[in-house]
Image 1: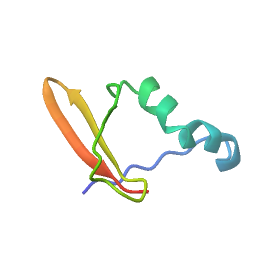
Image 2 (image 1 turned 30 degrees about the horizontal axis):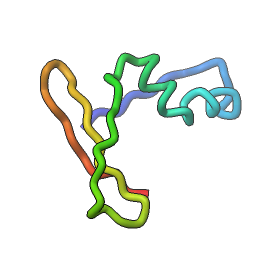
Image 3 (image 1 turned 180 degrees about the horizontal axis):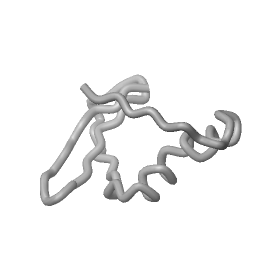
Image 4 (image 1 turned 180 degrees about the vertical axis):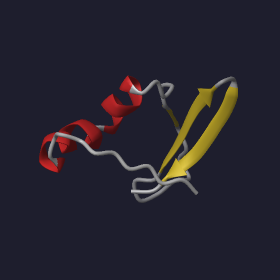
Length: 64
C-alpha cells in the first residue's frame, strides 16, 4: 500500500475538471487506449474492457 501526498497551488474545484475526465487523464498520463469488448451477457450497464500494457493483456469488467 502506498500513499502519495502533494501540496498543490490549485484548489480542488480548479483541478476537478481535469481529473474527473478519465479519458483525458488516461491519455495524458500514457495509459494505453481502452477497448470495449462486445459481451451480450453483461447487464445493467456493465462493460467488458481490454487494454495492453507493456505487452501484457489486461481485461476487466467495469461496474456502473
